[in-house]
Image (tube, rainbow, N blue to C red; front, side):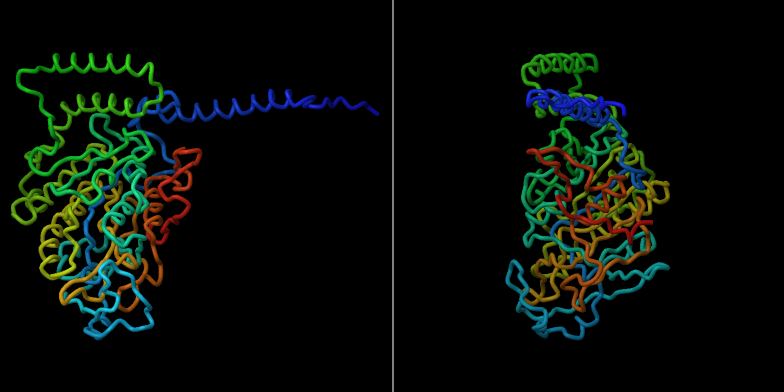
Length: 477
């Protein structure tokens, strides 16, 4: 019999710590190598923050345009017709529905029928009301999610959740996760752009902020009007050579300052912003110059009409940005919760649909005509819907229990209806899609497993969907 040559691995606790410590070092080295492969390192998390990165699997969408209808459009007056609501108009909500918690306490108010006329559109027969005749022409390219739900009752928390996954401020936004995970294809433009109409979005910049991530990944705010980027043009007396010399000096001083402050992501972000701003001075003017578009395109977006010109301008700008490699563009309609029709629903939605319907549809048609819709995911919706019960005599309250969202392009199966609400449109009853599920699906279309796209924070691998979220596979092409 051959004698055993086995030697005990650990002769003492010191041996154990020495050998085990080497293993931990290898794990750290592996993590550092992975970070460097993504353009990051523990010493400098923002070496190349916008460099294109590979997703977990083949992506269906390369970019996202989120048309955000702030304030909560009424799904039961737009996309989810309810004949029973019409039949029960003026009657109390049946006791079988239980107590309904709403901000204005309208749980006991009577049912309010929709005054809109609905028609089935496209080969798929999706339902659209007469408030959105232009979106109806996109029916066969749209997936209609009818049973979405969220956690917040009020606008600030609900807008925050639709953007960051949480009703509480302080988490990275959806656009920030997209740029963190994928980078961007154009290093001379921001990876994440936010287009507002001038009014303050409720919750402000936290809706496109980075939370605990490096600030580099936050959204860049473009204003409304002909000059969306402030301070883009240098004074006439400052030439390109002088401008570059100034930037080089700032970079040198920042480098000196950072040597004694390793790991300061705010300094990294500021330096990256200076450098991007300089590159944008050469690239951005062409990207935002709509005079290069032909008259037919401008007319399609409604730039020739007063009520559609402003939102149409920003929708067209969104197309130009994704066309040039910007990863995520968010376009707000109704800043300051303008869709919040607690009274005069008819007047409110007539005005806002008149402002947004034509440009929204034009964007989808334009992307499709240019061969960009297959690689661009378009999302249309707000932070919640509205109740079937009236508020006063002419309005509807907030409804996070069941509402509609539209998605098109980027790997979405067009002409699809997913989920249903109850006979009055109050709650989702089948195929329910939480905000976390919506986010998981968006990340999936961008090529990510939402459970694996993580950022280490306070000793925890945090993610956009927290510990929830399921991909809505039924709407994937």
